[in-house]
Amino acid sequence: MRRDLLSVFFSIVFLALVHTAFSVDQQFEACEPKNCGNGLNISYPFWIQNNHPDYCGYPGFRVFCKNSKPILRVSNSDYILQDIFYRNQSFLVIDTGAIDNSCPAPLHNFTITGAPFEFGQNIVHLLILYNCTASYSDEYPVLCNTDPSLHSFAMLLPWGEFDYSMYSSKCSVVVDAPVELDGKLSSEAIAQRNYALFLRNGFVLKWTIDESTDCLRSGGRCGFDKGEFVCFCSDHPHSKHCNNGKSTKFNFFTSFAF
Ligand SMILES: *[C@@H]1O[C@H](CO)[C@@H](O)[C@H](O)[C@H]1NC(C)=O
Ligand SMILES: *[C@@H]1O[C@H](CO)[C@@H](O)[C@H](O)[C@H]1NC(C)=O
Ligand SMILES: *[C@@H]1O[C@H](CO)[C@@H](O)[C@H](O)[C@H]1NC(C)=O
Ligand SMILES: *[C@@H]1O[C@H](CO)[C@@H](O)[C@H](O)[C@H]1NC(C)=O
Image 1 (cartoon, rainbow, N blue to C red):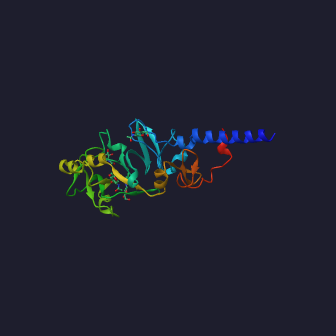
Image 2 (image 1 turned 45 degrees about the vertical axis):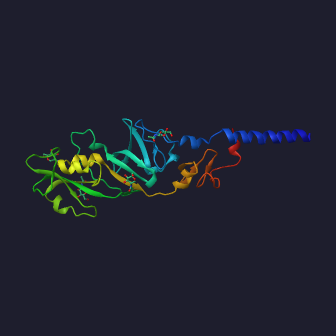
Image 3 (image 1 turned 60 degrees about the vertical axis):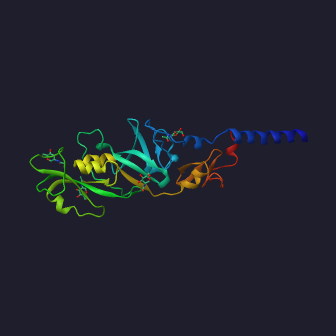
């Protein structure tokens, strides 16, 4: 009798060890980096709608795929997520309207109010002024969505709070787009007086949440579940990184359920 109990006990221990050794945590698997087809791997804090479960990233970092490209919706407009720099927690976005478009000049302002982002460095305003009764120096011509009898143009202005009133009183529409003065295409844009190249270059945004380094270093995949940061590891979710305590979501007994 005693022997039977003992062997049952060892079988359970054995099965538990086998389970721990060979089964990879489901959430860890679900949050593996994925892409939209263009090769850019998307992972926390970003996540791909209909491809990753929502716990793989933050709500404001949801990306969807369109024409094999990851798209982030910010400021009520679609931006291509062109690159992600996990090292310095920033990413490069390009207004979808600036690409493959006979009229790359945007008709919408960009704002990060309410989004968990900050602007990167070297950002300047590209002001697009439509249908103005006056012209200004240092203009970049804008030829679409315009009235040819009036003046329409773009101009660069230093970053910062800005008073548009002197322009808006003389123009029918004023649009403010962030661009980078030191982007790859900037010197061409300036030399050719081509504002569209600034837009095609995109601009860098930073994310302001910072919890991922320890988790990634320990081999985990970060996530955000039920309002809390989680580090999904191959064994089970942890609260900070794969070598520290279990996440409050982890239950000893359910981990043995097959
Ligand atoms: C994306 O991730 C996969 C799997 O981890 C890897 O094989 C591939 O090299 C990555 N691609 C890029 C462009 O980093
Ligand atoms: C992060 O690094 C990338 C690549 O080196 C760079 O292009 C980007 O501007 C950097 N981000 C910030 C916020 O400085
Ligand atoms: C500028 O005026 C033209 C002609 O009235 C109009 O078609 C165009 O939509 C206007 N542009 C903007 C940005 O409102
Ligand atoms: C963009 O923002 C400026 C400043 O707030 C405002 O004057 C302008 O009307 C806005 N343009 C559009 C198209 O909403």
